[in-house]
Length: 79
Image (tube, rainbow, N blue to C red; front, side, top):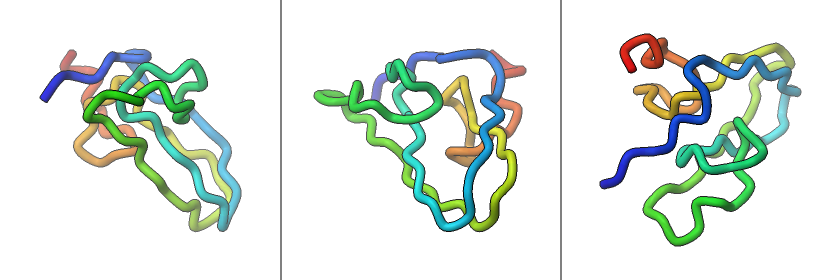
């Protein structure tokens, strides 16, 4: 399995809306970071769908190495 591209070495703070679905980019190639724009096509990567349980700011992984996609778990500090 190939490694994802590191989009940034830190999380993306994103305001999400309750009940809305989002697709987090897992490959790191999307120009619409942290969200998927289809740039993963032809690779083994797939976007991660998540639904916001409440309206709030979440911190989505920017390094693409989190153990808890799509949320940042601090993995970027070890890169």
